[in-house]
Image (cartoon, rainbow, N blue to C red; front, side):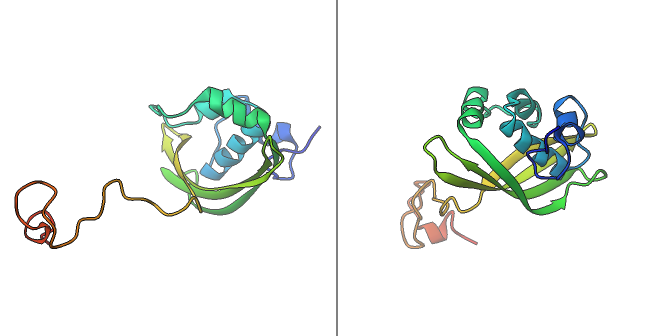
Length: 162
């Protein structure tokens, strides 16, 4: 028997293995641990099935490439907010340690959001921590510049009016 990749100090079969075989994780943190272990064990179907229903931006082929080309070294749970059995939402901040195919040690630091639907936890979305500053989709408009809605008024007298 081997220890679980999620670093719970439990045997895999008695930890994340039972979730990979179909048991529902009881909390958002347990689902996060099971997802990490699924990457480590190349169980991409579990990753796909644990996404919130309706998720369209998950690419199983890319996930499998990442899972198989990485050497998974450990999971560190930084914090957990809500996500208990009676909650409907949860947030788990974690650091996944791995070595990429070029041999670089990587820390994937993310704040993940989870949602409970029909008594089952799902991964909703996540924000990578330290990925750099957020960039505006459009340039910032100054108060005295023409309004971007093309009204002919200054921004402060049109859409920027508080």
